[in-house]
Length: 328
Image (cartoon, rainbow, N blue to C red):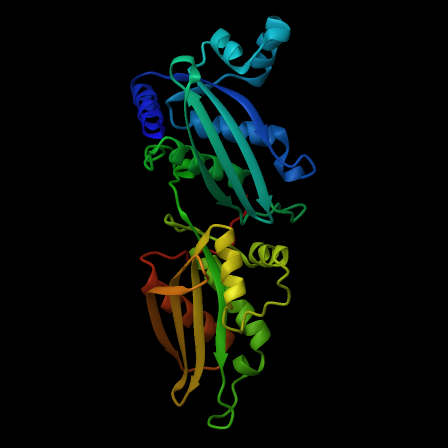
């Protein structure tokens, strides 16, 4: 039965390529106490997610509510949609943890709206307001809804022809674990980056986040979001200079984060070697290495350390960001 539902929605979606379809938003569920998820933001995001495909037009909620009042007590989602001439009814739920937004859609269509499909998607924001320095979550809301719509319609190229700012596709969540600092003070002259491993490891993780934030295939999780996820599992004081633990990995996996960057920073006679690993997190917290990259650092400076981090990332990924934090 599920297969027939998907096929039916495929048919509805394929018809939309040649003609615009009307969409009615039935309900959006979210934490009413979270100002970042204000209903007006969610409605605007979902409307743009549909309409930026050029295949759908969303009925304004004011029009929907007016029709519902006219129908009276016998109003149902289906009756209101029929009265509006809407071919699709959509239900959404949205949740946020720090800078990560998760949206889930359930879409009903076909004769009598008896066929349904659904999917979820994620979005993350790195944007801050110039005036308040608070995070701006609107882009994360939109991209999470776009990715949820891609999965709901089984169309990863849904936004391939959209404007650059709206061109997204489904992507995996990518976490950043600890960089294991391995010092050898009895063998070599002490380096400041090892003695000051707390700020050094933090800078390394921040550099990785900044370099990978605009990847198409991954949604990188920043440290604030990662640490909030850990805190929900009772994991506190997680240091960036220690290797990632199984409890940390299981916690990340429980939040759909199934890819992670880990590393090893080791003092050597030539200076130090940095190895970064792109790994897959298994259901039991086990790690499978997908790629690894190693570079040597010869100077004991923060800039040299950042440079070697980026050198490793260029080996792991075809493109990394060379930009500093964007501002809206």
